[in-house]
Image (cartoon, rainbow, N blue to C red; front, side, top):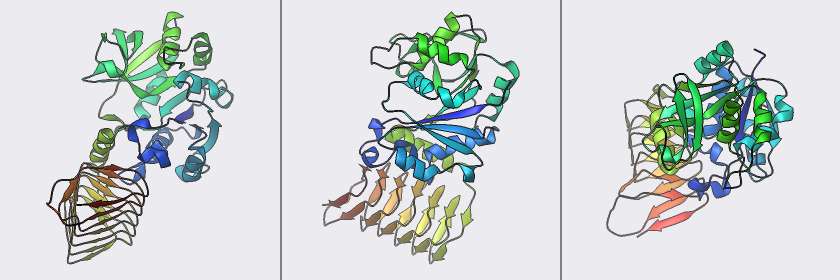
Length: 357
């Protein structure tokens, strides 16, 4: 098989993560203080794929270009491909045809996370050389996904968000294709929602007698497109954290797997891991509980935070109660005025100011 290329789709609007995504690309929202998109790039490079195209939308393309650059720091060469309108995954494939050429390729949705990476799956694709290899995982709500019907080790049918699912095997956001997918994508019509569906293009391969091979994902997979999924992905990534204390602890206690980045300062505070504290952050007279990621240059005083993500430049002052299961955008100011303590839960976009009575 020829050398594989990588194609990362990073053009979605991220409507399920608003208001965060009104001001930032959903693929750049961090999980364990690393943008989701970076996990996909690293997974491709780890699998031996260094020539990567990233499909971007007009609204967020500049931000993604600035974050990723030319790919050198990942060990990759990155080409940016503009998709003017989000007209479906199969449309995105066609948009990238000039970049892909005749090469086989891996298509990776930029807001997906796979714990085990894709190295073994790429190896299987190289060895068996099917026209397409799709990743599947068992889910409790298959009607919310593209679903595969199998006959032994062959895929016989794909259905997008079926009312009566033929199985509980949902498509994971990573696909491997030979160049035959381009003709298949050209042969289909837009779906009822006006998009060229990748499930229809793969079904066209199947109907044409091409080999479509399934692989069941081992370990966890997350589509980090909603608040609950972001927090769950954050929790799962933090489970693998290795303790590292590069910052300064002053009369503070750190328990469990905790990373305190260089330049961070903890005063009279307790951090219980798994948790990560970003560079330049200052935490005083506070408690940070498990499954929390605090980004760079955050200020936290007199507050309790658990199972949350706080983005760069935000400040949380004198809450005198616990904030949990929350995602705060960049440069958010959160304070409390006088009143009864209660548990707080937030999804707050960038540059907000909130005073809680």
